[in-house]
Image (cartoon, rainbow, N blue to C red; front, top):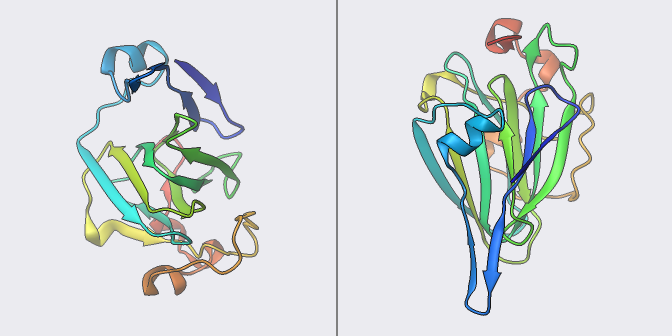
Amino acid sequence: MNVLETGLPGLRVIEVDVYADERGDFRETWNARTYAERGLGVDFVQDNLSRSKPRVLRGLHFQNPHPQGKLITVLQGQVYDVAVDIRVGSDTFGEWHGMKLSAENSRQLYVPEGFAHGFVVTSSEKVLFHYKCTDLYVPEAEGSIRWNDPVLDIDWPMEDPVLSQKDNHAPVLENIPEERLTFEGV
């Protein structure tokens, strides 16, 4: 397993070891000891699985209070995954990182607390999207940032995604009160 740093502090790409033969393959997607040895010593309290059709975009979502760190794994299909630093006071506040995650490339993304997160399905098949969370889902703490915020200028690989009403009407980052965002060193 390789853990790669991104340009955003705490946001990491994990290249999982895959053991393949003529029968198929095997990969370990979480082992507390192994991940802690590589700098990801976090406690997860909730697992989520979403299914999404092609062209569906979910996000950009966050929680505050009760920010969630997320370990993301795509089990079927492919997405373009995005994390945005919304830690007030961070040197990288408002910066984003995007990458392809798929069942084929066996990569995971660890999104730390204090980031907004979203993805768009880029495969022609449904996606099974699994993520482990460091805090429980708290509906009243949920927040969203508009996926196509012109200041963030995220380079989504799709111009006309399928959106929920909530995501379609989310505010841009600059219109979200600072107290709704997280603070550096959450």
